[in-house]
Length: 530
Image 1 (cartoon, rainbow, N blue to C red):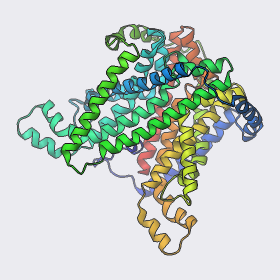
Image 2: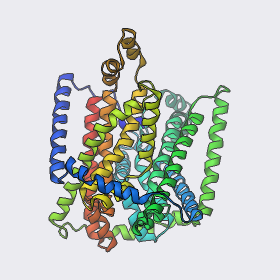
Image 3: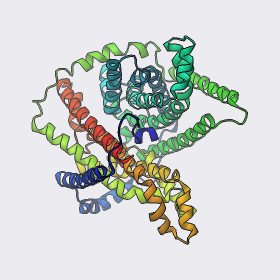
Image 4: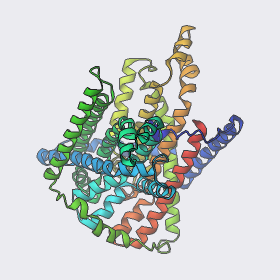
């Protein structure tokens, strides 16, 4: 995860002078504040609006209680389906990302043109929301789990390909030169010198991506792409709120269990064994075998024809091809308004998330939290909020506050608290304990330690995490319209639903430009901070 938040450092790039960096960062901070205020004005967001809607939210939550499961057998089956979709989609993405990463890494790519093309594929996959991929695949392949698996796989390539390539670029060139001196070819050089160095980072990224894909897969059912999200949408459409809350509780348990499992897997695979490297290789091999068995079992349980994993491009390309040439004239000013609204939702939600999650993250850091009870309370709240996808939260706010961008902003802001809160807590736990001990040794209290030793060290990570959150929120805000929570998503999914693929193509290009621009801007700012 840290590789996502920190830019690649290269010796060839001269550092930015501190004076210029300070001026630029202050200008960026002022621009961010102004942009957030302008965004809040554009979507008519005001704290009073949310306060006025608290009664409606409380009434809706009261109608959800007590939660119930009307068909435990079906829900259990859909829960297993969701989990297997996440695993299989991540494995397929990893199989594609490994060779793609070698083409996208500067030190292993065969040609600059190949490097640019590989990075372009990775950027496109990362910029397009998984729910958009799922909606298009459903149109091409029909309702079922296969569109969901392919959507998860394609979107995952955007993250896995980038981080796998970054790990390759950070490998020591010494072993490669030694292998090359023996007369080995390119493939042997990569397998014997590069892969062993990159494997630990790849494993960590892969396991973390399964955790992410599990969260994503629970909402793919909203567009008919399989999983437990279909049952949840059915309950929400029927206004059977106790059943919906029961399904959300099941989702919470699944995601919490997966988070604990991924922590155990990471520690098992990445912590050196006292028995030596041989035992580490055996553990990783056993994990690989278990993963392969799980994938084969997934094909059986999900009733997927293995050949469908190879034949899907033909019908899909037919649907994707109908998006070209894009039609920008059909929507006119509505497209521009929806695009600005999407950016405004992302900006305002991120600002709220940053303000509320930084204190929560500090309380959730084990080495800084003033009391164990506060630590566990903060960590529990972070886990609960992270476990519920923003699209589900948006459904609740739409039902309570009505259609529009305010509901989407509130949903993203609440989701941001859990997402950024965890990043902040983890970053604070990783700071150097020396300054903390020094302040405490001279009698400094908790507040003195916080402002003198904790925050100064954590500022770069806080800025990097906040920019990454903005990047994520802009992507997420592009699909909130599917449930009426504002932004460009409504126009996009309405165009797909009515088979106006040329209009959908125009919207997809706008989404790509928005996400790519925000990503490049945030990456540039992070490069000034780190």
